[in-house]
Image (cartoon, rainbow, N blue to C red; front, side, top):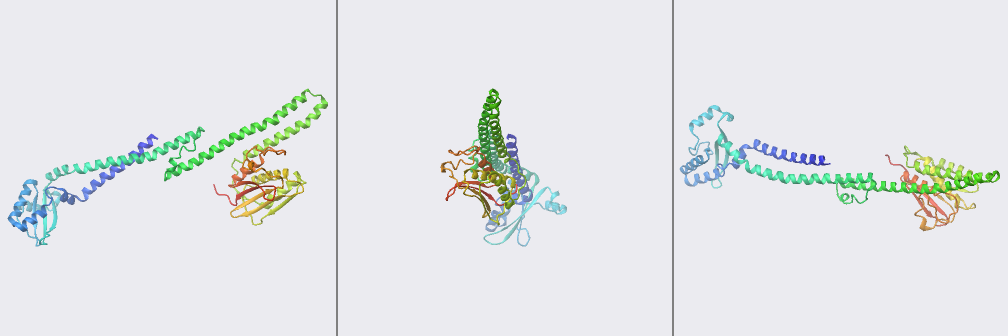
Length: 442
């Protein structure tokens, strides 16, 4: 992370330094004449002062002014009127003018030639000023004139360096926090509010922190539920195993006749243990990748449930309410297992003279698959706990391990929906799988 910090800071600083340096160099290279005319002290106000003296005091005073400037700054000056004729003699020697005329190319001359036009505010006449500055004098001025621009650039670089430092820290510090949160998440020491302050930022890093918090919360929830499931599984497996040990111990000490009576009990405990393990495996498989979603034939699904019900509970009646316009995408085997569990629960509590109702209805963009019985229902204070693995409402004498509703709930979640459990207003209990009609890709 430190390497990233210095790379970002160096990139910002170098970019700023290059832009500032290139701006200075290009400005001087492209506008050298304007640069010199505006900043050279020998040319500062020369045109306005000369015109005022010329118009008020005459050509002699104006010529004397140019000669004073030349002695002080070594700058030769010529002034032309609107007709193109020299208004005063100027300070440029005639032999130098002849030399300039012969060589023509300004780059081969020992001086730099500059021109500037000035209009008198009093008379309105225009004047053309021609300046010639020797290259040594110009080079010396350039060296001295760089102090203030370079000072300004240095100050700007310091300010921009501080800005770059702040910007770099605003990027690398959140990444440090995210790295720490990832480390804590791997060590199961993650705190859901560890990135709460970072999540308040209104930029991409804030959105990343929010998404990471949600991911961490889900992972912690999954880890917690898996741990709870392991504890519950250990507890539930302990009971049938203990009964098996007791039955085996009794069989070892019993005679042949008593042992024959114990075999059905041993077989029954083995069947219970096998059923429990099967339900645990079914719950665990729901976390595996189910593959691509496919269109679910709801009519065929209901027919399969009816066929199974005739074998497992022939005394119970089924009432089917199937909306022919209902369409659903998902995983048929998972849904059939979930509905079969809901149906078995309904058969346990519903009286034989009242039907168990299976309803499939379209509700906007969702499809509701519900199973309703006419049993005693569940106390309202236990409704929230229904669907948790191995939870059984108090007072239930029916067999079961409390995994049927947990399997149905997990199947609904894998489809992007939910399991709704409630007491029916007209009596009995109703369990509904509310599922989106289509599955989102990915």
